[in-house]
Length: 376
Image 1 (cartoon, rainbow, N blue to C red):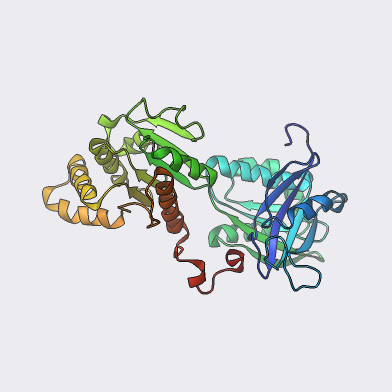
Image 2 (cartoon, helix red, strand yellow):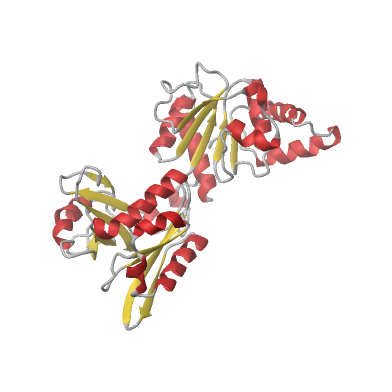
């Protein structure tokens, strides 16, 4: 938006009272010409925020409270949540540093912490943790943060990153008091799809819709093509005969999946699947989630072959196979009655999401103590 000279307002959910469709940290970007990206509610607040955002921020950033209930407080409208949402509204002068940080974190797939001032003369000023120090020079926050105490701001951002949580604190420095809201922004999830068959296409599309980094790889060059996977972040042709390769080369051969990522093995080729599994399981820090398409009998056969490829001692293979099998997700996916490539993709991604968030995957009506932001 800045590239084409458009002015904008960034709206950030910084607090929720009662029930709300979006959690603190949700973002919406508005431009003067009417474009919009992101949401701050289930649809009941967006138009109201857009209609007032420009004059509310004419003199600088502001925090505004919006209710998702009618004036009489009895009947919710729009999303039906009936809660109160507090939004930080700001123009590029203070929003740009945060958007630069988001872009950097998105590209590098790294988490970061951010602390933002919510009131007083330095409203909208931020400190960051986890972002490349060399890039922070462009954020322009040092002088501004000094007025309210740079060390507390930085420590709040670092605490948010360490705790992986958001919180609000009150700080005072040289007679200036201000609320500081600290937020944790998780890294972009990564999904490594090993297999470029027709059933991998809906899996890649749906993961892309979720905003995940998606890599597709296969030893068959006629399948692993940009034409078949135009929206994937990466499409690679695997040199299958080189897998599992030497330990020092294993990551490069497979595309360097990270420990916090998810990998799905679904080439439908026994040779490919066994070699890919050997490569993944041979990492010092394998991806946290490894799923294998197909019945358990076949997966055990794949693991036996993988053990041979990794040249494990015969005496160690049975115990190692059981350890591997216990950590694998095989058969992959949740029981959703899936019977088509699209529903199988939904089942697989649902299980990965469950694993990532340590959620129950139970119907919400059966889960006690769920956050109001989810229940609504």
